[in-house]
Length: 165
Picture (cartoon, rainbow, N blue to C red):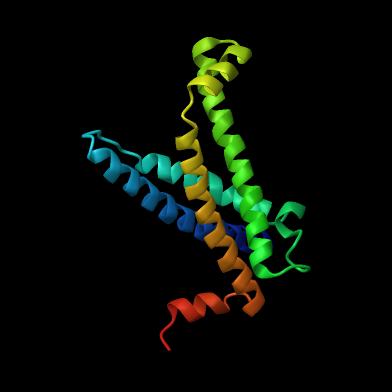
């Protein structure tokens, strides 16, 4: 019975974080769709939002238990701790997005050196930066919410936001 309750707890925790990131990525992709519509470019990315939210949700829950995720919680202000975590997580995001681009270039060129040079010379850095900034804003919202909730008492902020007075 202990294992079943642990699995339920983990599913709930990861599920709520995943739902938050799905909502954030959904907004980002809707904005992207609206911007591309002015150029008459069709864009469908629901599956991308779902997969990205699932991956980021699990990674964030895991990173929150590591030293990188808890380093400044007890010794610094909430804002500093949230900013630190956002920068660290955004750095990981940049690395993952870069690795993804290199992987796709490697599949086309079949040599790692050529793939890296192709990404370095032909990749639009502005799009990469926009993605990292948007995801970073989602990370900041998550970290601020979690930090405030932890300081008020776990579940208190959720009750304040979602329950009627």
